[in-house]
Amino acid sequence: VGFARESQSIGGWEEALRVALLHGERLAGREPQNAERQLWLGRNRGYLAEYLDRDKRAADAAAVRRLALQSCRAALSIAAATADQRLEAQTCLKELGDAGVK
Image (cartoon, rainbow, N blue to C red; front, top):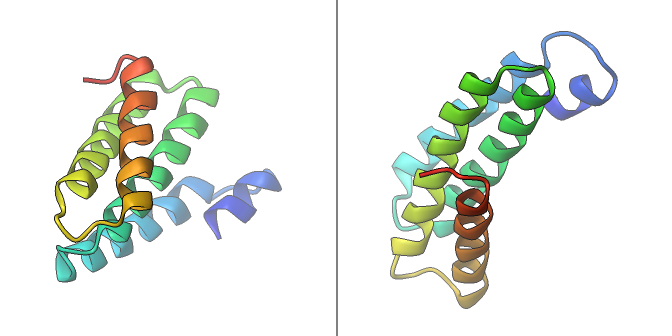
């Protein structure tokens, strides 16, 4: 819903994305050994950060990127992660690192 609202320039996109992230956090909490949950959080936090940057909210974007970094690190630390999930997590960490996120 958040992506659809944003692409159509309809208000409420940020709230919709944040609600989706809250649901994703709950799912990740219920399934701590599911790397896909953490990767989903990392990807979608990254998207939110891009939109916040676009709206000239650099401090908010930086905070969201730090959360994305935590999610990607968490995914990489999950022993049951597949090779593809590990690659995606490593790519996420590299991209965030290249953007200066620590």
